Image 1 (cartoon, rainbow, N blue to C red):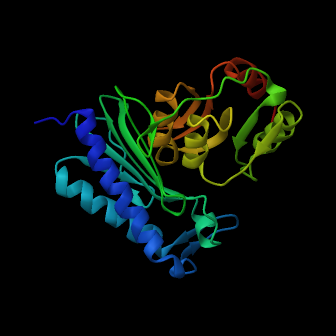
Image 2 (cartoon, helix red, strand yellow):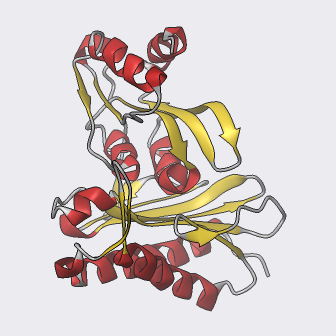
Length: 257
């Protein structure tokens, strides 16, 4: 029997809470590195937290497919696909900063139908279904009504090996009130949903980073758009409060590598 979006959301909430709670309970282990790269880090807790989320999902939905940042496979079939980022903002977490979260979404029929983002250190649970409102701790969310670029906060990130990313950062910084790099795509999108910023843009972002939070932002009134799909799990992505979408998109598309 197929589960309805609100039933899937209940599982997503439980899974996100399980992953985030495990990370928070083991925060003193945040320096246990599994893999280090030039500008990123993977922790042993990333793997453990994904396992926590997967156990919840498999208990409730044993026949569903699974994709996580730390393993799994993208599928595009009639079978629902669970998409998990166990710790979004791992570098923040590893430094003891509070801006990190656990993200769980489910994709069905080619679209995200339910998603939950749990930020343990902020005690915030963001949720949405495809047919319901965006909420934070059960309170409704709504994007801002700012309609001037020079009054807008825009969240983004930089891939240092992409000249386009650096050029876009320079171009956007001249046009908006402030650019912010918080280091967690899911948290950026949730803050957009809450009306605390006007846009979020990444020149290269992964499905597990944006699946749940993108739905939450959209259900809060945001306009979201994949500007370029690189492969099934990686894209160029823009989300805005609506009034600033076309002006920001124009700036982004005009930038040259």
